[in-house]
Image 1: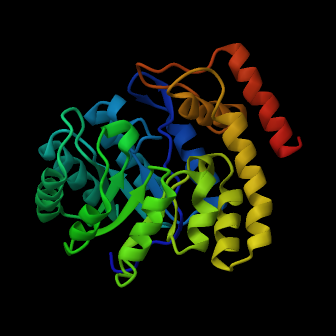
Image 2: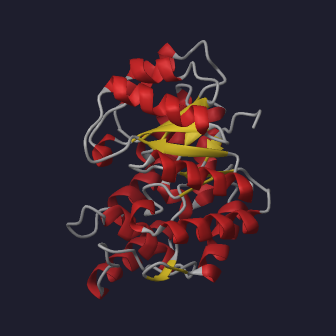
Length: 301
């Protein structure tokens, strides 16, 4: 891959019909919905894709299904986060065989690695990978923060090409933007959609935003406005994005409320099933009704 990806890269949900059973038709509808909405790439098997709750065979099948449906129309990135470097490499091999252009890896979880161990791990992984590697800073889920100095050092590796930051720490993100200002080829993406407009205005390459599964046109429009430095338009669209964040992602007292909300909204809109992999379960009727009402208010329909 010679060209840096810029824009909105939805972290795609994994539509399911049951435990380890992919909702094939729902997956196809979701892909067409996002491509029609103008997204610039797709990211499979990340946090929003419930990767760690899926069997390896299910992940392999999903990579194959999505890449076949996309058929090269937009780039596909595949999450390979794992506690085993061998399993990460197998996922990467499958991704390459199916036509993906890059892989994404958060830090191995369970025992929290030191910064030096992270450098050694990512270097070893990048050395063996058959595709370019994007770092993934997800401290809330893996218990370790990819410090700015660590990212800068890893950016010197020829096969490490970018980073997705889901820390929601703007000081950290702007520090990276500053420290990497002389490496324009190294991509910087922001995860939390509440911050994407601001980050793109300040030089980010795009957003990996879960809400773009539901309303791709909205997130693409804000990215375009930020790219054009149309601050008034960014502010206007930010109101809609914050309505989604506060109404769709905060139903129920669950650590997975965001994921439940995204999948439930997609189900209400008739795009795909809202089943989740264990240990998570879809919203109950009362909670689903709150999503129905929220969508009515957000869409005006």
